[in-house]
Amino acid sequence: MKSYITTPIYYVNGSPHIGHAFTSVMADILKRNRVAIGYELLLSTGVDEHGQKNQEAAADLGMEIKDYLDMRGKEFRAVFDMLDVSYDYFVRTSREGHKTAVAGMEQTIFDKDLIVKKQYTGTYCKGCEEFKRESDLTEDGQCPLHPTMKVEQTDETNYFLKMEPFRERLLQHIADNPDFVQPQAFRNELKQMLAEPLEDLCISRPKTRVTLGVDLPFDPDFVTYVWFDALANYLTNVGWPDEGYADWWATCEHLIGKDILKPHGVYWPIMLMAAGIPLPKKLSVHSHWVGAGGVKMSKSIGNVVDPIEIVDTLGADALRWYLARHMRSDSDSQISVDFIKQTYNSELGNKIGNLLSRAAKFSKSRFDGKVPAAGPLSAEDEAIRAAVAEAVKGFGAWIDLPDIPHNLQKVITVCDDMNTYFAEQAPWELIKNPETEERCRTVIYVTLDCLRLVFEALRQVIPTSADRALAMLNAPVSEDKAWKPALDVLGQETDLGEIENLFPRAQ
Ligand SMILES: [Zn+2]
Image 1 (cartoon, rainbow, N blue to C red):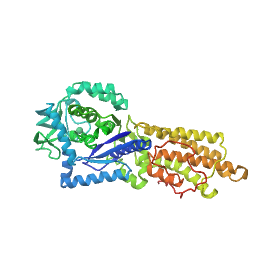
Image 2 (tube, rainbow, N blue to C red):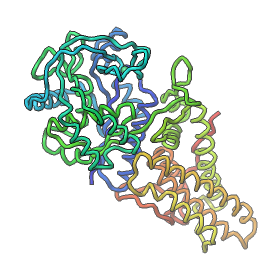
Image 3 (cartoon, helix red, strand yellow):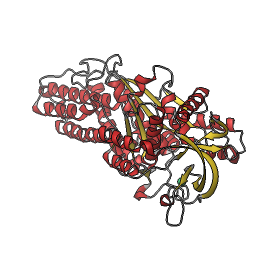
Image 4 (cartoon, rainbow, N blue to C red):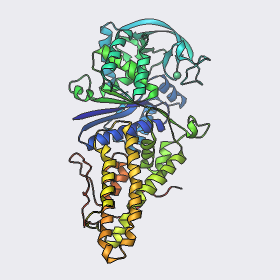
């Protein structure tokens, strides 16, 4: 069984920010989940290297375009590596194979008479690299996404893809495939975008204005519009148009932010229909991150959360945990350095790491460095075991984006229960009396085995910390077979590993 997950390819006119980190980490969590349950995975992420904004960003820094793109490509890659994003393919749209395939797709569509050349007079937003209709603009005539950039009046000749002939078909596809866009709110938003006749999509830019892009195969005076070229990466990554791409392509799931629903939900499916290529399986849409109090993040307010800074101070898993635990799929979520720190201390530190450290250290000192053998189980033991098994069950099956925070809520709730169980059973009291020593061993075994199961599940979310915890328990996970959440896997009378502080308190 195959599964192909894509993140958007990120525009490299600036450094990687929290939004880039978020989508790629979520894609990585979905990948780890599916690999764990036995799927063969392909995860692609990368950078979009074309278009006017990149061209200008290089010029602003006084850099040669190639040097600029190399620098940014390395920078993005380094951030994803730091964040343990296990991508299989890192996209750079300057790759020759990609450019040839894009030109091939354009020629195919052109040959079907679906591309027309015409003059266009109208408003253009450089930020979106898009022509705007009056109804797209704010009351004072600016782009709502780029209010400070000022839209420009343009009058130029370009090539356009006919969109309207495909609108009904796309609506029908959405109706026939209720899972095509998730969650539901964005499916409705997309249907709204398709409620009225579609204007032709401008797919070119004259070289007099933009040089950084793929030449149109039928007119070398023009380069391809950056979205047309960028979207095609999803296909070219799996080797399209060569044979063998279809198996992966049929499983393709695009992870996207809500701001790029239109290119992915309208332009891309219609480009594919025009080229005679099947549509991807699914669009998984997420909302954005805003600062504390719902304030947009900005340098001037000073509430920007820099992913590199967080990784340097708290580690990748602190950030992964926060993003995974606190994302909302249908509304914006709040983030700040303080929120991340608090969640790290209170959840990873106090609720999970501390319990592991207490139970493992107890076992080390009282049971000769070994996991004790359990005696008969009490009703309380059975109850906590059942609760843990239930709480992690979700990670033993296929998860979608909204399942991530949902499943983590269950894990945190059951960690509270485990802490209560440990406090109530009070093994440090039980050990004092020879008559209750066996009971003590059982409580420690149950606690450690439950923690082992929790960390096995958390390998999908905080892989480095989870593997370190499992090494302390001397319970590495075999990756040879599909993972199934199970109790009683922790070996009795086996040596514990070195006990370390998994989540040192952040000040
Ligand atoms: Zn704009």
